[in-house]
Amino acid sequence: MTMPDTAALLEDAADRIADIPWQLQIMPRRAALLLRNSGSIAFDVDIEEALRDLSGEFGKTRNDTVRLIVREWMEKNTYLPAPMLDEETEVDGHA
Image (cartoon, rainbow, N blue to C red; front, side, top):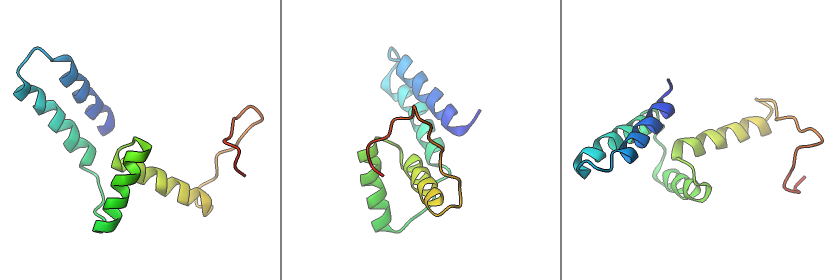
């Protein structure tokens, strides 16, 4: 089981135990948060602020946003192969 899966399970457990005191509900939520942030990279303050804003726009976590940025940069600079599109794939109209 990977860390994101474990974090999701912990959050799901916290959601399902609504009939216990809130102090106990916080424990699995904090554990999930620690798991999600355990492998993070420290950036300068201005980059962290931009990542926080961008993550909010995307509706993703900070780490997911960093993964997306790195993947797109690597695809654009041919370090990774770009995803192949077939005739049925819908695009947003940009070339």
